[in-house]
Length: 191
Image 1 (cartoon, rainbow, N blue to C red):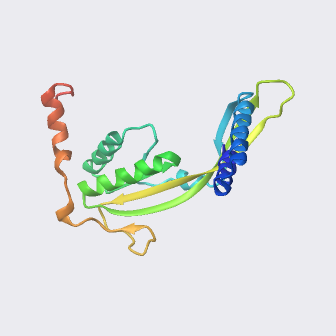
Image 2: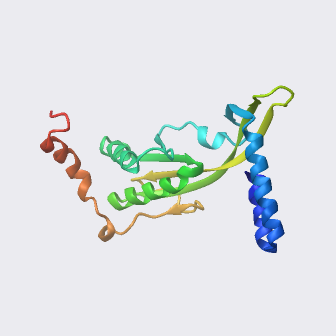
Image 3: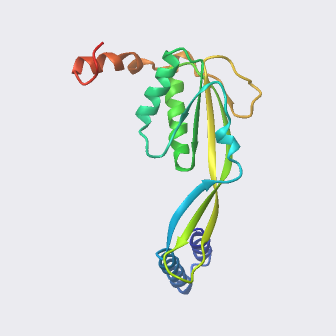
């Protein structure tokens, strides 16, 4: 797919009909070749330290499949249980969701924020389904983000520092009502 994208981008610049036909041919060729392989292993290469750093603060790992509401509820419960700092970590497609979740949390509590970006190498190993083909290894770089949210002041000289929002912009509203609404509807566990 990477080869196809760069080739297509070059085609668009030249905008010749003959070149567009070549793009379609390349796409069909790549698709036909990938039908002869299957993904057998996917692992992280260099740059993995960014996401794997161990710390004493609670962390929330966000994926592109999870619902933002669940991550927000979990982070709010961590703050309600006395945590002073929570770290949101994500990579790839989940980065947009992580930024959205951080902004929603900042509108519920007066949180200081630092953001750090990095990338890590992902290695995909494809095994051939037919005889005579070699094992294919694909190296790709995936963006990573780490958002640290804290009730306590943080280093204001950090490149990714953002101060808390003014108190007039906070909307804590539904955080206090979540527990009451579940027990009144009868779909939660009453205590």
